[in-house]
Image 1 (cartoon, helix red, strand yellow):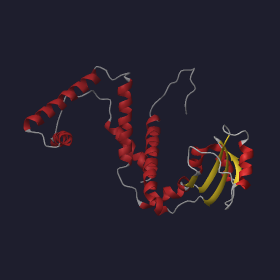
Image 2 (tube, rainbow, N blue to C red):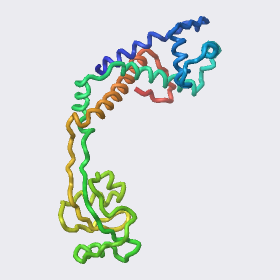
Image 3 (tube, rainbow, N blue to C red):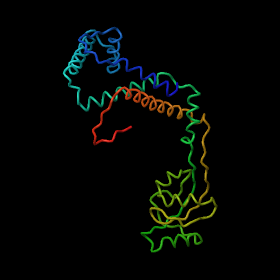
Image 4 (cartoon, helix red, strand yellow):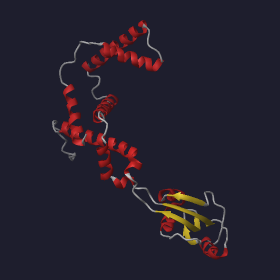
Length: 261
């Protein structure tokens, strides 16, 4: 189902909302009773007894009367909590309608084709490093430079000395922007390279391997794409529904406020 069709289907729900007077007739049918019984059963793990079902129905009627009377008295007006809940429930309703039909394979594949860059797998680096602390040495950078030849093991390090198949984002989280930018500029080699700076000091590194970034095959990420496509349809459907509703309203803004288009 396309985003446009979903939006059009959602707008049909507006037909259920009218400005007519609030009815004083409360009519329950068998499906209402079954729903109330089912909710009770889910909470208690058993069917309600006859007298319990009577109490459940009585409570429903009581709640419905109070709800309608609160509307009649205007108690819902300017209540931010009720306003927020009603907006949320209407949003959920539009999303339920958008998701009424499962997505076909073509719709999922089309979403992948249109958003392939979002599924790109980041490049991954494997390396080890030696650390030279600015706090423990007079000239950590110089010592790191000399270690390329001397074999100095460096200082103890609070994090790992070796990282396997880590993304730039992960490396940045461990060792900071400077280190990540510097190691990304290196070529793989069997020898130590550097020195390069980090949040903690200076390092020499042995870069074993770099796995290039790539976009995976559709089948490998199909489940994730399907979830993303559903979210996209929800968002588009809500936007379409709101645009249709807004076109039916006149919004008058104060002169001091720039209208939002």
